[in-house]
Length: 333
Image (tube, rainbow, N blue to C red; front, side):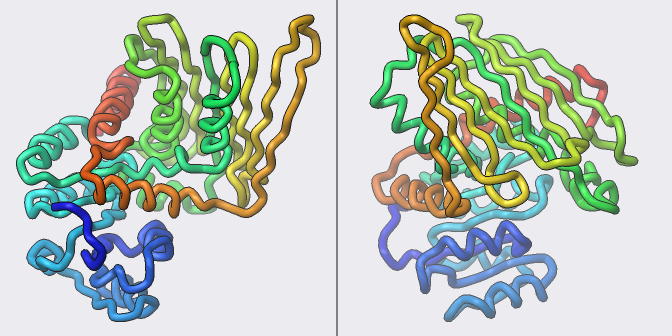
């Protein structure tokens, strides 16, 4: 199904993320909200003109006016819902990680080839302003060859965090690695490409929960270029830091807005004589518009029939890395 003006949207999963997604959609595009908790679906529908609410996924599947579905449920529900929607030939924007197992995404990929559905996985960090600026700089500047990157992403939780859904493997499919760690893996893939070697360790150091609260990951491609990644929910002070090293430059993204601090991009340009680099600092104080940019990209995917990136292929690779780390660390989810 090709996207045309007038194809309506449904939102399945009406929690915080579903609400964020709804705010990015043009007026009049959302026809139906769906959540097992009907009150949540009704609350979101009440903010959208002409929108109805349901707790029955079959209402979404059977409505021929619905061309696009946003799936923002708990992790373990993402793949079953997406598969059911794709079987109906509808397009899907599913929140990261899209599934809890790479095999689930592979099955969806096979079905999507038959039905023509397009599936985008919601790795919205690619669309944060600092990373959009990096893409612009890479087109215009000569950084030299990419060498390696290192990144840290963490928060400190809150009282009762270890009793929330993310701490329940039956809902989350894992801990910090499959929550924030997948964002780091996805972003690292922009520079590493295909991964040849995965090493690392996931552990539960602090929180009283059966899932990991820290994960340490090392990724390497065939050229030996490397990413060192650390995801943590014992960071205490929320942190996002992503450093990319080239032979003639370093790029450093710091902060994501809100409690993570103002988002900034530091561009350190090596001088011929070396020594202290020339430094440019880009600051993005206007907040996070990544959700809107990501949706715009998906609408363009649908309009021109383009395979979404990141989509199922990228999601499969990311989850395969997560599975590898969990297996090596003795977790079975």
